[in-house]
Image 1 (cartoon, rainbow, N blue to C red):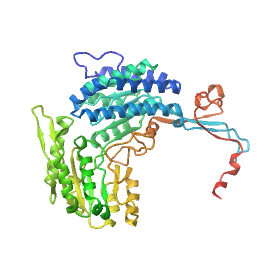
Image 2 (tube, helix red, strand yellow):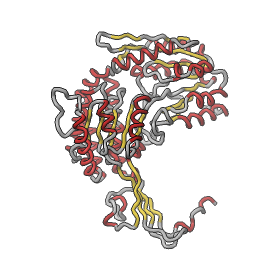
Image 3 (cartoon, rainbow, N blue to C red):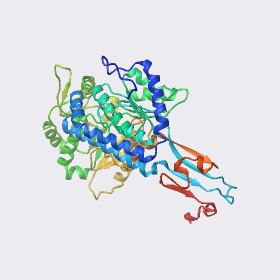
Image 4 (cartoon, rainbow, N blue to C red):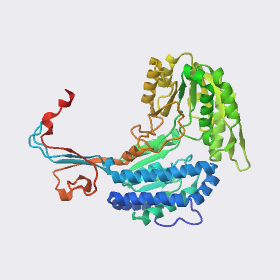
Length: 509
């Protein structure tokens, strides 16, 4: 948080004049936080997790009021946020993420004498995290970007989302107090408010990386700001995804109700306000599955959207889809606005032929943020890989629904295409629900993200906020702890001993 209290009369505004002070405070905190021993940083992360759980009732009450999300959903998300912090605490202690490599000095090296070389990853510096609206815990103040940046040894400034400002401020207080109580320096975590303030801070000389969860339009603008700085910085934006799902003929004939009900449940979850919501379901025969989809949609209770602005955007997007030529309605769904301007919705599912989907362009292919999805009729499974390639160049996920023993050339080709255009490929599963675990990849080619080399969920997320440094012939006592022979931090070290180069290539024999 900021080192001086925000004015009580306007707690959700940060003065432009304060930004340089906040940036300098983040830089000072980084100098201390980045040099703490791994177990000290890990204990602070665990303390933050414990504090979030201890404050759950208070935080969830605020979140429900500001977002309209349910108690059950928010408690699960808060638990996920705490688990994520604890997971990164273990990552820090383990030390694998440092990727320590030591090449012994070698007078007989194959290319001539080799010096003593030691390489590790080091934190970038203060990180600016732009919160997302749809995950007020998991992709907000204490969410995955913050957790992974803190674990890397970076201080963090969070640009709070306007959709849940009170929750952002209180979460920052809880987490910041816990971090500092466990030995972190002051201002390791700070929060700022305001769109202009976020853009201004992204240009600060003190900020060394940015992360973002939100729309393609806003994410692209911010990415361009980061790239246009006199000294450009990495910017990791999670933007848009429609997460296409493809059903084989055999699967559709065997399990139409299972597929239809699963599809609707995934589309309707939290009013469809997930970046992993399946936007398109490809089937060979709509008539086989339409009744199951319609029945499932009619059983979904009305759900409030996150805020009036998002609800208005959803209504406009829904009107566009429904007015598109040759679109047929399977489940019309509803949208209504209450006296406070909040939108309440039930799922809308439409259908269209594959050829008409392609010719419609952005009218149908753009993401619909809300409980709206399109069933697409295809003629032959041999089309699917090419449709995926042409229509969906970049997504967080892509899914296949097939029988367990199917192995047709068309299916193999489709899965190969999906791994080229998606960060996560699912088999007989739905993309909503992202496991917080080491092997998770939550990223993908543009427009899913601004940089498809990264992930915002899973332990690999820490790599976004690190850079490599090599030390050549540096005396032991001057080396970083992770590179010393006595290895006081106990981290894994990959050592290339002298003499090894003469046998390079023999393993391929």
